[in-house]
Length: 303
Image (cartoon, rainbow, N blue to C red; front, side, top):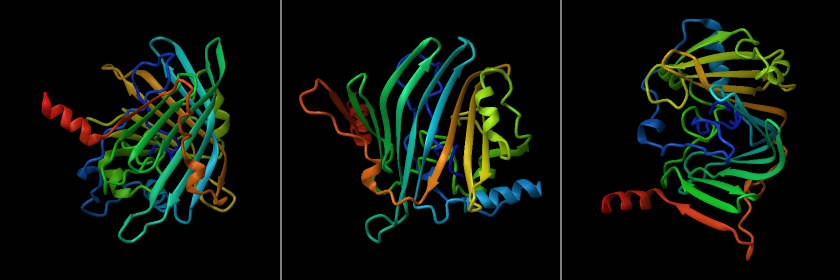
């Protein structure tokens, strides 16, 4: 499942109340439990859902790279605040190499070039990059480049996997893993897209299929996730839209995020250099910060 885990397309961002500051991705360090294979094969009681999950498990087969336009909208329901960032997504699969990388590594670059928040509109130059272990955030407006380690050596994190990466857009995620963690149902394609806040997305999901996921346990990043997929001209099941939400104690939505992919192109020959975050310019007043997991542990032990 690419998008809840993809980019969708890009997706698991901070679900703290939306503010006018830069996006703040929240990604927990990967754990052995997170990468362990489910203990048994599972099946969904609804044959249609079961068949769709089978297709999603292999939807990334043969995909070496993927790119497209990306719209990311964050809605703070309490404050009636809507922020939208528009840009592009580039995604490359690095093949496994014996003795170096035992499993394929998924690497992505999201580059936002426009921001709007109510009456505020501006050109933007904000990049998110992920190389399997390190998350890169670069903001030209703030002149900062932050590098955060979210997986240790040998713990290859999947940025498109539900609950792991900074984007909810699963593509190629194991069916058994999804069924172990979520209650999954098929929903009408327009459900969840009513009202002016989502009207811009409703027209783009025609002909798609919607999956609705609710966590079966506490501690997930979202209280519910909706994923829309559509077959492309080659019969590949690709993500179209992802919608995640946090709920209050009464079950009302308080924080909603949408990730929309459009104009998707597959296997155009992109290389690792095409998904690299730009370095800090020399002598331009920029600040760069690196946060390694082992350093965080050492600091914690010293207190």
